[in-house]
Image (cartoon, rainbow, N blue to C red; front, top):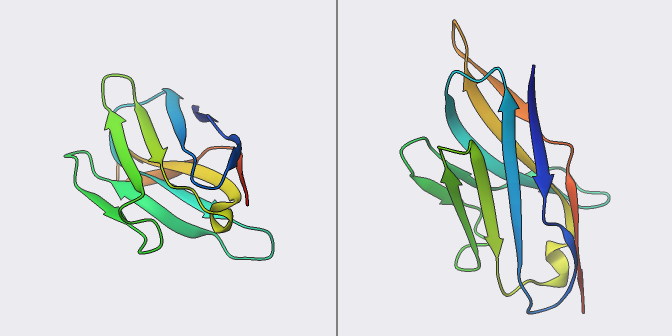
Length: 119
């Protein structure tokens, strides 16, 4: 079994910062891509940022220049540093990890952590 546990969410004022963490544990051979998505009330889940095993990153246009994704492969952990937060960043944030299997990969998801940005 594999578990992803997120932490770091909370309530922050607009312009503030938060750092999310997501640690993977369990039967892990290797982790390929990792990422963060978010889902606001009444909206579809959207990709926020992703990072490959080699460290290449990609971001949603709405967070470029404000959010930074990183990972520590020794700890099987992915981070999301969120700066200059806006009320529209309010959402439940989910991390994901693509784990190598005997054939192909399988994507695992965390349980989500709430981020609320007040104006």
